[in-house]
Length: 259
Image 1 (tube, rainbow, N blue to C red):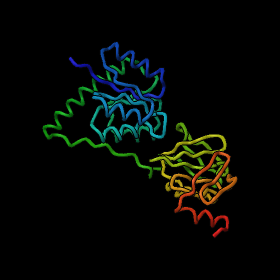
Image 2: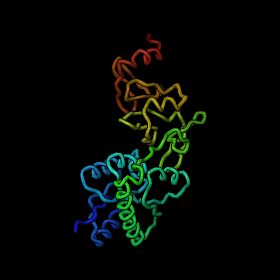
Image 3: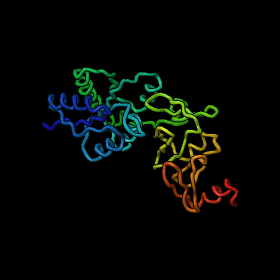
Image 4: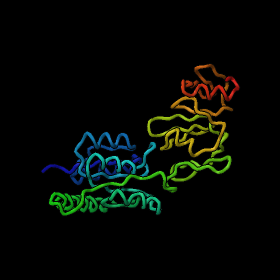
């Protein structure tokens, strides 16, 4: 008989390794362990995965719920969440992904075994009914940033509150040095920390009222007060040198009365 293939997505390495060891002893095949979304999607895409054990808190800009949404767009697979977070906001975000189980940490391995067996059994029954046309196709709703509970950044006067490790951290706007965009997220650099947020640079400017932060490139925005020198092509701050994009040059120079 072929073994059941399990993907573990867990940001605590000790928990992941203990879980993998226990599952191997139960004759399951652990096809991989990931601690962030990109690696999890890669493993999920490259391997046949029968069930996913998913932590909600992950390294990187995407959490486990967002990762499950992306996985289900690739193919339907039963998911068991393993998490320490049981707050109402988390539970409401989990619901649209239709998990097979939601196990609260610290969990016991026997509960994981039972959850796996039930998940596989129920999923097989669901697929059979679906093939017979007796149930509607499985769809996963995406989480929405319009929901205030999911907003990664909020402004109050001269401060912003940034969602970091499931809590909001207070940061003075004046401490923001520069922001770098990278695909579907941004890195916001302050005087002593870097925050990674699931926002575009345009969405950040929609949320902030802070005229000292100016966009100089499609991928960069800098705090004018952090600029040490500039040319027509670059801006230099204590954090490094940044390019000035052609589309942003006029607006930048106007701030210095050069146009």
